[in-house]
Amino acid sequence: MTACLRLMQDGLVVVEVWAPRSRAVREMAHYAFMYGQDGPVQIVDVPLVKCALCGEMIEVGLEPDGCELRECPMQEHNQ
Image (cartoon, rainbow, N blue to C red):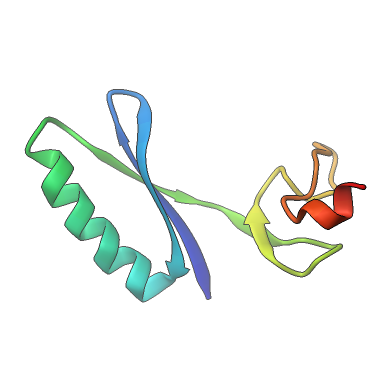
């Protein structure tokens, strides 16, 4: 299952990893170690849903048929 993990530092996203969960966790542990040398970091597990139009995993709130309608990240659906 695809996961999206974000590494936050000083309120900013410094790294975002989209990968199968086990790989994403390994990569994020590495990034957290590296960036953590510069100050505190926070790892955020971004909730994902399947896009009703394209079937890709996208961030909750971006789904084209949801109440928080935004553009589908798959550009061909926005035309």
